[in-house]
Amino acid sequence: EPEVTQTPSHQVTQMGQEVILRCVPISNHLYFYWYRQILGQKVEFLVSFYNNEISEKSEIFDDQFSVERPDGSNFTLKIRSTKLEDSAMYFCASSGRLGNYNEQFFGPGTRLTVL
Amino acid sequence: AQSVTQPDIHITVSEGASLELRCNYSYGATPYLFWYVQSPGQGLQLLLKYFSGDTLVQGIKGFEAEFKRSQSSFNLRKPSVHWSDAAEYFCAVGALSGGSYIPTFGRGTSLIVHP
Image (cartoon, rainbow over all chains, first blue to last red):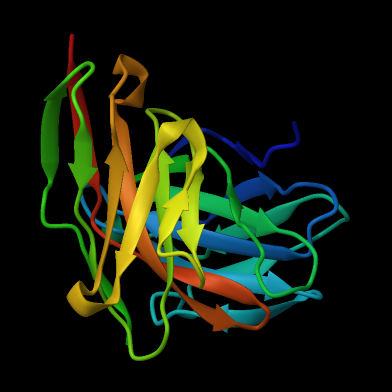
């Protein structure tokens, strides 16, 4: 069964460093998403991406964040200059064809620790 | 703006016992409601969803949920819990955005299953 994969599973970085979190969505999907979950808190929507551009973003997704689909398979989240409060679990998700409802399939997440 | 409340942070049940996880939502229009499960080290998996029609919806793994508009609730139930059901459960209400539904998640309920 196809699944969303994410690498790395755990990333440790120093405050102020740039990080890139990588995701490989399900191959025929059209919509891509990033969410984050700070420890003990809710899963929060960051951004959705469709047709090579951002279609929706939350207020969390400020200028420090960017997303890219550099090739036909990867979907990346870049944090330009990490802060302590960026420490969280980051989930990638993808969903399929256009229509009334597209179930989102989530990856296992990348745990980001900012020291 | 939509919101979801899961009043129980932890629920402990014995294996074989019945289960009900509570979820209350706030949303201005007809809600699109979801339950997700997150097992340790795994991504979020969709258990079931409600869009319209029959207010009792069946999902995977023997779960069901009932939409009650008068109570703004969408509680998750299972008649007999298995040890493998131990996980984090998230209720979500979805808003259509750009062709897909962006879920707003509750804080989650951690299910502990005693043998």
